[in-house]
Length: 232
Image (cartoon, rainbow, N blue to C red; front, side, top):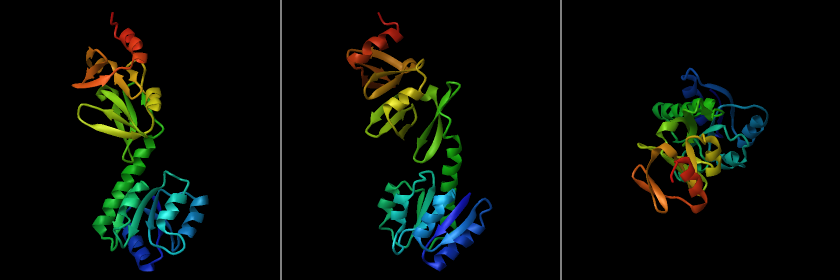
């Protein structure tokens, strides 16, 4: 993994650089004392990981993060205060380390970043052999077997996939999910629901039951559903 260290405190930069030097797959390309220097670097050269201080003069780490165009850049914030934690994670950063950073805490953050970076290698794969899809869940791209999906539900800017054991909240639209799921196995039954046809337990007036949960079926989709299920 290639990285940049951005901190206006030379001691903090030296500490992070020393810790990074002990991780075999982590290379520090450059160190900067200002957010603007890092910004200029990232306009022409890409790295995998950014160790970024929050409190810096002129432009702080939060401002820099908001202005970066590369949304795939993994960021680990470093700061001497805990008060920025909520705002930091709203920016979808990988981790938030409070100074002084210990070796154990550093490795924990790096391992989290590594998992994110490695998971993105499969980002371009959507459906393979009608057996599984890849879904982005909490910055981690996970393989989800189609056989495990009971149904998908639209929830604002997210789509939640339900399986017998776990739920996965994915940023996106139900229309996008409908396009990626194989139509031979899944069908939309409501503006808020896509269901796995073979997981239907029972059909009822106004809806159906999957996995013990009642889901509504809109009139606009009922005919197509009945046709797919050979209901007379």
